[in-house]
Image (cartoon, rainbow, N blue to C red; front, top):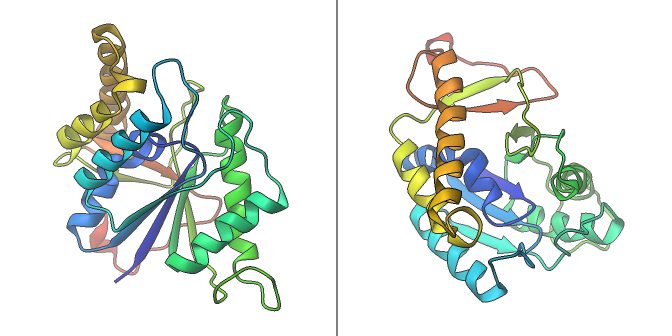
Length: 228
Protein backbone atom coordinates (compact mmCIF):
# COMPACT_ATOMS: atom_id res chain seq x y z
CA UNK A 1 0.00 0.00 0.00
CA UNK A 2 1.16 3.54 -0.76
CA UNK A 3 2.79 5.48 2.07
CA UNK A 4 2.10 9.20 2.32
CA UNK A 5 3.90 11.96 4.24
CA UNK A 6 2.13 15.29 4.70
CA UNK A 7 4.45 18.09 5.82
CA UNK A 8 3.32 21.27 7.56
CA UNK A 9 5.02 24.25 9.18
CA UNK A 10 2.91 24.07 12.35
CA UNK A 11 0.47 21.61 13.90
CA UNK A 12 -2.98 22.49 12.44
CA UNK A 13 -1.82 23.48 8.93
CA UNK A 14 -2.06 19.99 7.46
CA UNK A 15 -5.47 19.48 9.07
CA UNK A 16 -6.77 22.78 7.75
CA UNK A 17 -5.48 22.25 4.23
CA UNK A 18 -6.12 18.54 3.70
CA UNK A 19 -7.72 17.09 6.82
CA UNK A 20 -10.63 15.66 4.86
CA UNK A 21 -8.30 14.04 2.35
CA UNK A 22 -6.26 12.44 5.12
CA UNK A 23 -9.44 10.97 6.60
CA UNK A 24 -10.38 9.58 3.18
CA UNK A 25 -6.90 8.19 2.48
CA UNK A 26 -6.73 6.49 5.88
CA UNK A 27 -10.17 4.93 5.31
CA UNK A 28 -8.93 3.59 1.97
CA UNK A 29 -6.02 1.85 3.68
CA UNK A 30 -3.15 4.22 2.93
CA UNK A 31 -0.38 4.63 5.50
CA UNK A 32 -0.46 8.35 6.27
CA UNK A 33 2.14 10.19 8.36
CA UNK A 34 2.43 13.87 9.32
CA UNK A 35 5.59 15.89 9.83
CA UNK A 36 5.39 19.34 11.47
CA UNK A 37 8.57 21.37 11.17
CA UNK A 38 7.83 23.40 14.33
CA UNK A 39 5.63 23.00 17.40
CA UNK A 40 3.81 26.21 16.46
CA UNK A 41 4.74 28.15 19.56
CA UNK A 42 4.76 30.89 20.69
CA UNK A 43 1.22 32.04 19.86
CA UNK A 44 -1.13 34.42 21.71
CA UNK A 45 -3.41 31.72 23.16
CA UNK A 46 -1.20 28.65 23.15
CA UNK A 47 1.68 27.00 24.95
CA UNK A 48 3.88 24.04 24.12
CA UNK A 49 1.84 21.84 26.46
CA UNK A 50 -1.50 22.97 25.01
CA UNK A 51 -0.34 22.54 21.44
CA UNK A 52 0.95 19.04 22.10
CA UNK A 53 -2.39 17.96 23.57
CA UNK A 54 -4.13 19.42 20.53
CA UNK A 55 -1.95 17.70 17.92
CA UNK A 56 -2.10 14.39 19.77
CA UNK A 57 -5.91 14.50 19.83
CA UNK A 58 -6.09 15.57 16.19
CA UNK A 59 -3.71 12.77 15.16
CA UNK A 60 -5.85 10.21 16.98
CA UNK A 61 -8.99 11.46 15.25
CA UNK A 62 -7.29 11.38 11.85
CA UNK A 63 -6.13 7.80 12.36
CA UNK A 64 -2.64 8.45 11.01
CA UNK A 65 0.30 6.08 11.51
CA UNK A 66 2.66 8.62 13.08
CA UNK A 67 3.31 12.28 13.70
CA UNK A 68 6.76 13.83 14.01
CA UNK A 69 7.22 17.36 15.34
CA UNK A 70 10.66 18.85 14.76
CA UNK A 71 12.33 21.50 16.91
CA UNK A 72 12.81 24.12 14.21
CA UNK A 73 11.87 27.70 15.21
CA UNK A 74 8.30 28.89 14.76
CA UNK A 75 8.03 32.32 13.06
CA UNK A 76 11.70 32.22 12.05
CA UNK A 77 11.82 29.05 9.98
CA UNK A 78 14.55 29.21 7.35
CA UNK A 79 15.59 26.99 4.47
CA UNK A 80 19.11 25.91 5.38
CA UNK A 81 21.22 22.75 5.30
CA UNK A 82 20.39 21.77 8.89
CA UNK A 83 16.65 21.99 8.29
CA UNK A 84 16.87 20.11 5.00
CA UNK A 85 18.79 17.27 6.63
CA UNK A 86 16.30 16.99 9.50
CA UNK A 87 13.44 16.59 7.05
CA UNK A 88 15.48 14.19 4.90
CA UNK A 89 15.99 11.96 7.94
CA UNK A 90 12.23 11.69 8.38
CA UNK A 91 11.71 10.99 4.68
CA UNK A 92 14.25 8.17 4.86
CA UNK A 93 12.56 6.77 7.96
CA UNK A 94 8.99 6.90 6.61
CA UNK A 95 9.89 6.10 2.97
CA UNK A 96 6.81 7.74 1.43
CA UNK A 97 5.91 7.43 -2.22
CA UNK A 98 3.96 10.71 -2.05
CA UNK A 99 4.73 14.00 -0.30
CA UNK A 100 2.10 16.65 0.40
CA UNK A 101 3.46 20.16 1.02
CA UNK A 102 1.95 23.64 1.52
CA UNK A 103 1.13 25.53 -1.66
CA UNK A 104 4.22 27.47 -2.65
CA UNK A 105 2.63 30.97 -2.66
CA UNK A 106 1.84 32.25 0.83
CA UNK A 107 2.02 35.39 2.96
CA UNK A 108 3.35 33.42 5.93
CA UNK A 109 7.14 32.99 5.64
CA UNK A 110 7.06 29.70 7.58
CA UNK A 111 4.74 28.18 4.99
CA UNK A 112 6.96 29.19 2.08
CA UNK A 113 10.09 28.00 3.87
CA UNK A 114 8.48 24.66 4.74
CA UNK A 115 7.88 23.95 1.08
CA UNK A 116 11.38 24.99 0.05
CA UNK A 117 12.98 22.95 2.85
CA UNK A 118 10.92 19.87 2.02
CA UNK A 119 11.51 20.04 -1.72
CA UNK A 120 15.25 20.17 -1.09
CA UNK A 121 15.01 17.44 1.56
CA UNK A 122 13.32 15.17 -0.96
CA UNK A 123 16.43 15.50 -3.13
CA UNK A 124 18.82 15.13 -0.18
CA UNK A 125 17.03 11.96 0.94
CA UNK A 126 18.02 10.13 -2.24
CA UNK A 127 21.73 10.93 -2.03
CA UNK A 128 24.26 8.14 -1.61
CA UNK A 129 27.56 8.67 0.23
CA UNK A 130 25.98 11.23 2.56
CA UNK A 131 26.03 11.72 6.33
CA UNK A 132 22.22 11.62 6.52
CA UNK A 133 21.10 8.58 8.56
CA UNK A 134 19.03 5.92 6.84
CA UNK A 135 18.81 4.35 3.43
CA UNK A 136 18.30 6.58 0.36
CA UNK A 137 14.68 7.25 -0.55
CA UNK A 138 13.09 9.43 -3.23
CA UNK A 139 9.33 10.09 -3.08
CA UNK A 140 8.07 9.90 -6.64
CA UNK A 141 5.36 12.57 -6.37
CA UNK A 142 4.80 15.92 -4.64
CA UNK A 143 1.38 17.53 -4.39
CA UNK A 144 0.59 20.83 -2.73
CA UNK A 145 -2.35 21.53 -0.42
CA UNK A 146 -3.90 24.95 0.14
CA UNK A 147 -3.33 26.51 3.57
CA UNK A 148 -2.32 29.96 2.34
CA UNK A 149 -2.71 33.22 4.25
CA UNK A 150 -3.36 34.91 0.92
CA UNK A 151 -6.91 34.96 -0.43
CA UNK A 152 -5.94 33.06 -3.53
CA UNK A 153 -7.86 31.60 -6.41
CA UNK A 154 -5.79 28.65 -7.58
CA UNK A 155 -6.29 26.22 -10.43
CA UNK A 156 -5.88 22.74 -8.93
CA UNK A 157 -4.25 19.80 -10.64
CA UNK A 158 -7.01 17.74 -9.03
CA UNK A 159 -9.72 18.07 -6.37
CA UNK A 160 -10.48 15.28 -3.93
CA UNK A 161 -14.10 14.70 -2.93
CA UNK A 162 -14.32 14.98 0.88
CA UNK A 163 -18.09 15.22 1.19
CA UNK A 164 -18.30 12.26 3.58
CA UNK A 165 -15.31 13.43 5.59
CA UNK A 166 -16.08 17.13 5.85
CA UNK A 167 -17.95 17.21 9.17
CA UNK A 168 -15.18 15.27 10.90
CA UNK A 169 -12.62 17.60 9.33
CA UNK A 170 -14.38 20.50 11.07
CA UNK A 171 -14.41 18.59 14.36
CA UNK A 172 -10.68 18.03 14.08
CA UNK A 173 -10.04 21.68 13.26
CA UNK A 174 -11.91 22.67 16.41
CA UNK A 175 -9.54 20.52 18.48
CA UNK A 176 -7.01 23.29 17.89
CA UNK A 177 -8.83 25.60 20.28
CA UNK A 178 -5.76 27.72 20.98
CA UNK A 179 -5.65 28.69 17.31
CA UNK A 180 -9.13 28.28 15.85
CA UNK A 181 -11.66 28.32 18.68
CA UNK A 182 -10.42 30.38 21.61
CA UNK A 183 -13.72 32.28 21.45
CA UNK A 184 -17.01 31.97 19.56
CA UNK A 185 -16.24 34.73 17.08
CA UNK A 186 -12.94 33.14 16.11
CA UNK A 187 -14.51 29.72 15.54
CA UNK A 188 -17.37 31.23 13.53
CA UNK A 189 -14.84 32.90 11.23
CA UNK A 190 -12.60 29.82 10.88
CA UNK A 191 -15.41 27.32 10.37
CA UNK A 192 -17.19 29.51 7.84
CA UNK A 193 -13.94 30.05 5.93
CA UNK A 194 -13.17 26.33 5.78
CA UNK A 195 -16.73 25.56 4.77
CA UNK A 196 -16.85 28.18 2.03
CA UNK A 197 -13.53 27.12 0.54
CA UNK A 198 -14.33 23.41 0.54
CA UNK A 199 -17.83 24.03 -0.82
CA UNK A 200 -16.38 26.09 -3.66
CA UNK A 201 -13.90 23.43 -4.72
CA UNK A 202 -16.51 20.72 -4.24
CA UNK A 203 -18.88 22.60 -6.52
CA UNK A 204 -16.24 22.59 -9.26
CA UNK A 205 -16.45 18.78 -9.37
CA UNK A 206 -20.20 18.59 -8.63
CA UNK A 207 -19.94 17.33 -5.05
CA UNK A 208 -20.67 18.96 -1.70
CA UNK A 209 -17.09 19.48 -0.50
CA UNK A 210 -13.65 19.17 -2.04
CA UNK A 211 -10.01 19.87 -1.25
CA UNK A 212 -7.75 21.23 -4.02
CA UNK A 213 -4.24 20.01 -4.78
CA UNK A 214 -1.67 21.61 -7.02
CA UNK A 215 1.32 20.14 -8.84
CA UNK A 216 4.31 21.40 -10.80
CA UNK A 217 4.00 18.32 -13.01
CA UNK A 218 1.15 16.76 -14.93
CA UNK A 219 -1.00 14.26 -13.05
CA UNK A 220 -1.55 10.99 -14.91
CA UNK A 221 -4.37 8.45 -14.61
CA UNK A 222 -4.10 4.71 -15.10
CA UNK A 223 -7.85 4.41 -15.55
CA UNK A 224 -10.20 7.10 -16.86
CA UNK A 225 -13.02 5.58 -14.79
CA UNK A 226 -11.56 7.32 -11.71
CA UNK A 227 -12.72 10.69 -13.05
CA UNK A 228 -15.83 12.09 -11.34
